[in-house]
Length: 132
Image 1 (tube, rainbow, N blue to C red):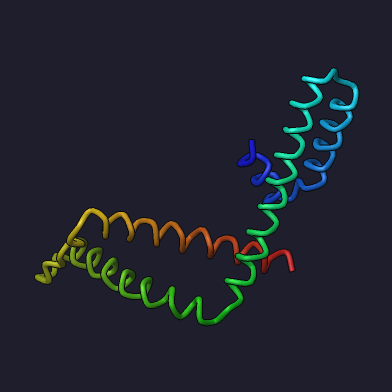
Image 2 (image 1 turned 60 degrees about the vertical axis):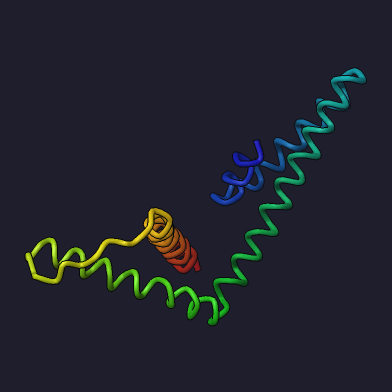
C-alpha cells in the first residue's frame, strides 16, 4: 500500500492521496471499535508513507543538486560507458580488441543497475527541467 501511495505522490496525485486519507478518517469515525482501530491504523500507515515519500523526495533533490555527487557518480559511470562502447564497437565492426567481459556476476549486476539508475535519474531530471 505504501508503494502505491508513494507512486501516486511522485506522479502528482498528492491531493488525491489527501482526500483518500480524509475518507479513511471519516470511515473510522463511523465504525465500531475494532473497525475504527483497524481504519485508524491504516490512516496512520498512509500518513507515514506520505511523509516518508516527501522526505525521500527532498533528500534526492538535495543530492542531485550537489556537484560532488555527480563527480562521484561519473567515476563509476564513465569507465562503464567506455567499456560498453568498446564492447559494442568490437562486436559490430569485428575489431581485434577482444574486450573482456566483467569478471564477476556481481559486477555485471552492478553495471546493469548503474545503467538503469542513469536512465532513471536522467529521465527524472529532464522531466523536472521540462516543468520549470
